[in-house]
Image (cartoon, rainbow, N blue to C red; front, side):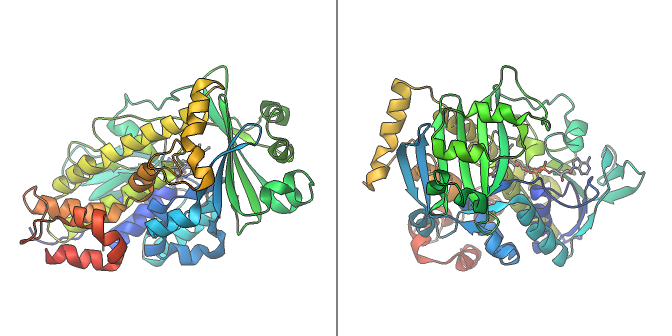
Length: 464
Ligand SMILES: Cc1cc2nc3c(=O)[nH]c(=O)nc-3n(C[C@H](O)[C@H](O)[C@H](O)COP(=O)(O)OP(=O)(O)OC[C@H]3O[C@@H](n4cnc5c(N)ncnc54)[C@H](O)[C@@H]3O)c2cc1C
């Protein structure tokens, strides 16, 4: 196969679309991004950039652009509703063994950093360009049309247009995102300055920490954002009916009442929240495919697999999708894979990952929401060794559980893509060392993680 020029069109400049734009440019592929909004930006709330994606922000130089607004925190404390500590993760220990930070950030700062780097790398980004139509039936190319009648033709169209994706609705009109339960969430920000003035609440913010108050059918998770100036809260609760759209006019008394029996320290901060919105927690799929039969239209992120928020993996998974897809399309540009092979590989490798994360996310919510009683006591006992820093091999605190940390937060999507492409090109067998028979994947899993720095990893795969 000859190398070829490829023009990718991305619908949606959210976190997933912009991350994909960066990854495509790094793979040497031309990218045009079409965004519906009249201005680039994100909603006013915090977001976790867990170690599986902080590594991408570092590699892609986005971290340098965001700077001190990427906040590191010292520890995670798992609490019962009354404030009693039941679990604990020392974040520096986790970061040291994964070799990456766990950041928390305002969405606007993250979005800004991604957009700056995408533009610097040469991505063309058009705002006020809501895509209304996707035409992919004839030939290899795909044409999209905006509501203003502007038409663009691409070799590949990537639907990164979120939960109500027009691209997904064109490909799979029968798919309907649904909340699995009546669970939904408030989001809010309170300035640290204001909390410091409260004699009771200030105890909670002596250090920069992440805190989780678990309660029957509800929880509050908090962390610092904006260079440690703002305190971000996500407040989970249940409603009598399933929620399918964001409610922007929530009476503030409803929120205050929901958490009235919580630890007085966090309750006083909840009472400082001036206004809030209530967000649905919608799940999309599992779907059988994420692409058109011609393999010239493909989905990433929430458009393909929105998930509940309890593992902080929705945006992270969107970013991983873009990074993986870009490696595959980069191989098409180099003449190593056909577009069909690239999309098939992306779906084969990424679909099981996304759907596993959907399930872990749901389960973590179930763990945090357990009713008081024997199950809650078993949960608390299963994370109790953390409090004393004792050795443990499993924990019900999934943010510190060794297995979950390695699988979810220790995952390196770009290494996964390199390995998957190398294996495909080697006839479906992992290219093993000619004498030892050891594959790059297991070499990395058991040995290289503490020996070889990541830049050298790519070289080693080339050599095998
Ligand atoms: C309470 C809560 C807390 C969360 N916390 C975290 C967290 O800590 N960490 C994490 O990783 N995830 C978190 N998430 C999930 C995360 O917000 C989403 O998964 C993520 O924003 C999805 O990114 P995306 O780019 O796929 O889609 P979106 O963010 O929805 O972006 C889609 C973009 O496409 C644009 N668009 C839509 N339609 C069109 C069209 N027709 N034409 C052109 N453009 C279009 C939109 O304007 C938007 O810019 C949380 C979610 C909730 C509800």
